[in-house]
Length: 472
Image 1 (cartoon, one colour):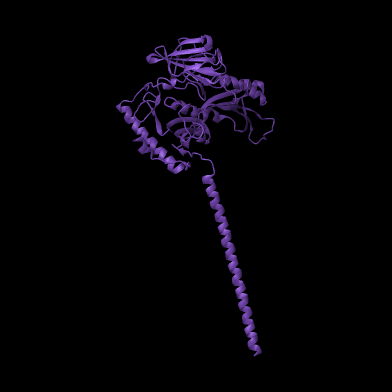
Image 2 (cartoon, one colour):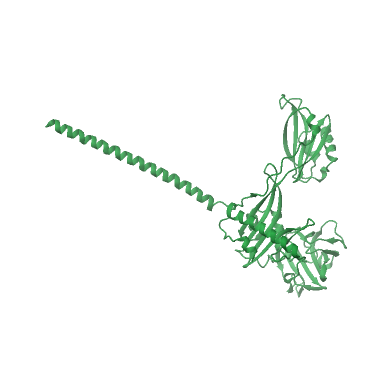
């Protein structure tokens, strides 16, 4: 009897131990499942944050294979004694010169003069601008230490323009060679597709466009849209533009606007860039009419319309009279552009208008610009100017309460409201030109669709079939 009870007790103990082990195993599995769930949740949260919270940035697409690397710079350098080399980088300062930069780097004056004399045979160092980066090289014999007495000035190089590098290299005692190296650049396309919340400028900058390219974009639309009056929050901007990169994948220069569209108050203005057989280019709408008009509506960037055309009470004289143009308030020194191509027929002081320019255009049109702070260089009466050329700068000369541009348009000597201008396009395409435009539109539409659907992370905006849109 006691033996049976002992056996039963032992069995109960074994069952209890087994139950405890099973319970511990279930707890371990539960902890593992919980840990896996937490890790998965963190990964999902990070992925969603990268998609929803990070700023929209257009992703580039390489449009062509990078150009092959340059050939040997100069065959005569192959015979030079092998040397170890190192360099330091400096940049031109305000009021300085390349000679001052070399002196600041501790280069002996005689050696620096010899190198600069060699450079002057190919390039004028006085044309370098403030901020130009220059690499200064030193060399020493192979096997020697970098701080040995044999270390000497080896030359310098810099990039005066995006597609060129100038190299000044030492070849002997106080002798230097100069080589112009062509820098191979590859072009990439970028897509900016964004809603306008404050201004076209801010929207384009948020799409990755450079300030200079944004200014070109605004000028492109300024023939059709009055940015002072027409823009609305929620308008949509689409731009296909290019940039060019060097062999080290560093941005070398901004490219061009290939396509631009602005949906303003429900109406879509779309323009395509088309190259002509003579090497020039222009932008055209869907019907093949050039975007450029005889006159621009706004000949100054970033200005605020401070006074309209028509009868008004003069702010200084105090009585009511006809205001024959528009006033654009802008900071002193803001560039003023010629509204159209033409000939300067008046330049100089003109009574209450202060510093003044009047330009005669085609079809009986003239434009006038008053209260200028100063004129662009080399302008005089009888000089020809091109549309968009800088002719002067905003000021407050004459009878003015503050810096602004007074802008007038006259048709056959009679003043007209610049905001009501409806001048014809500068040119229109013939049948062959239209066919070329259609091919360009198809290629641009395909590239934009590829960027928008595959590589561009601007998912917050509604997408449209651009090929179908261009065929409307």
